[in-house]
Length: 235
Image: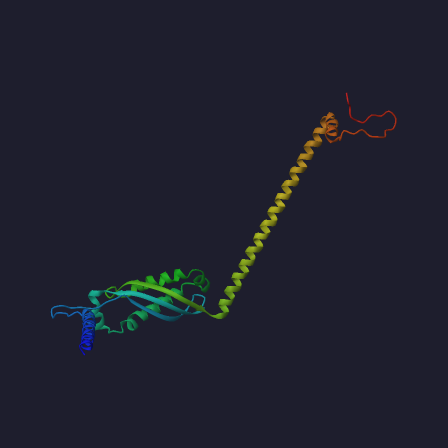
């Protein structure tokens, strides 16, 4: 019995300590604001959304985006009081829609595909200019995905394939032209060498004998007509 009581007592102590630790952790997450103080909990806000936009060449697009911003801590209470806790839907979203409409309308669809970041920067700059700086700061806007009409996207792919094939064909043409150029240069060099050699032989008949000596294998003909000696002058 004494042993069992000791075990029970030990368990009671352990559970009491654990309960105290949990209670301390919970209490540490609260802060009591005095009557003379004003406190607002503010963290960076991140929201995801999507909008439909038209490009300058009237291509439709479905856009997914992400926006991050901080609230100006000194004015958060006024924002909540004047607009409400749904300030993002009431203020931020309409400005995003307007900024995207204007930005997308300044670019053709192909320009957006080729340089998405230019559109993103324009939207972000417009939001920084139009959103109330008394409430919103550190605005960062990202385009997550831009989905155009399937027919347009297929046309873009076909254009890219055609451009790649054209570039490949151009490279082959350049290679063939370079090979032809090198062949021409080589042929012209050989022709020039032959011309110089022919002119030298024509100007100096002794070179003919010299050339013959260079090519002679040292053997005299086995059969000769009369007393003729080979054309080489052995003197």
